[in-house]
Image (cartoon, rainbow, N blue to C red; front, side, top):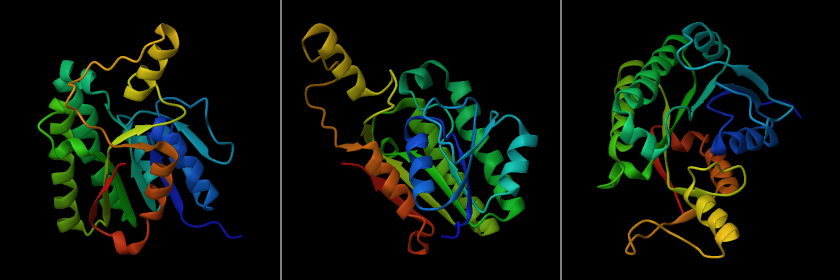
Length: 220
């Protein structure tokens, strides 16, 4: 079977990213991952480039070689974002603008951005603010340069490979250690959880042209 178009996954070593890479390869895409570290769940069929988004030379050369760009990198931990508004702006907003500028320069076919359902919430702090700003920049780049985008607003995701910042991971970990389930949020909170493998499958299916320039909520 012939390989489909080449895909760059920025932030492809993370929780969602590593599952996305697996799903893209299952669907015969040629995948390159750019991340600050190589995941212990790395896929032997993917090419890994160890770099941050601050390395313009590596970022540029890899965007140039790929037709589709998924952008999942940046600060995703809400508590970390609360404590570091400047770092969140740099790693989430400025990095996204740099990536968009390179996508416009090299005329990529599709740009897929990892956003969050927090953009429509009263919660989320600086993390939410950074995602709202990124979404606005994406729309403007699309108007000016014709970039075809998908903005994926991920909800509460659970499943294998989650780290210590994942809510379900923490609840289960504490349950195993303390024999009780502890949730530190409001008793009125409602979360619609979705399994990470379903998230990956949906994120690949959305490459279909019918989803050009769409916002898509991906949640339970």
